Length: 357
Image (cartoon, rainbow, N blue to C red):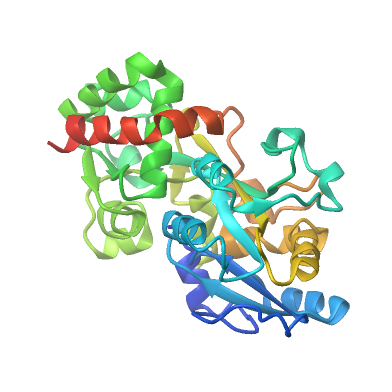
């Protein structure tokens, strides 16, 4: 995520076991048994799952993490004629049109695509990308704060502009943060092209605080996260993910009976992440095998607790913690990639002028 929920924690705990990580030269023409994956910094997989892929296929996986999602996509576009790897994972629906319009990928239809819901297949006519996961950007709330103040937590975008929630919300900069951009797009989907600026004027008047990125918002400003409490965070509302509450439970030193945070279900915007076979890849055969692996049941069921996202493969099980503490939003806001591409830059400029100046 490109700032995904608590992935940094997962990585820190050693849940990631890769053949190689970091910068590198990618796959050489003579090294047809190596597949180079280019991704964002939040890529993660269990060691045994990746080793199983390598054992079954004979390919070794080299991973090149290349910054957050926006940085990784932009660099991949700039290097598309001489790509750093064979397969790219992590372009989401907010950046998908930019990648496709720049010819970043070549077509490949994954073997298990028939078992992936059509709602996730945003390039189903050309198969230049394969959906791998989805997640929901939503406002999280600190249950203890609202209980102490005998105040009902907000449930909708409109609620956040009500006076009882004045000076309670912290969000990320839409120009520098993936969840910040997602929250802006969610508000645009909710209030329409003409209505979202007035909504943000109301949020600004109601004391919304804007910080650069998710880690600052969640770990320093949000009173409901474990790290936020340690840092003295005083905002009980934060733009984060629907999967953040289970992470608070899973990584607690002493697992609580219930999640300390909740999700305002009417404030969610859905992100879908894709993988694609890079144009001019030196090992297209290996890349295709790896894309098949990404939508295999083994990877899909391993993914939630590594990257805190939900599987797209029908029938893939999600961990009990997700079912109990962090179910996906039932009615998230969405927006067509073409509309995002047509409006994203203009909306971010307008948002910056309205909210930050």
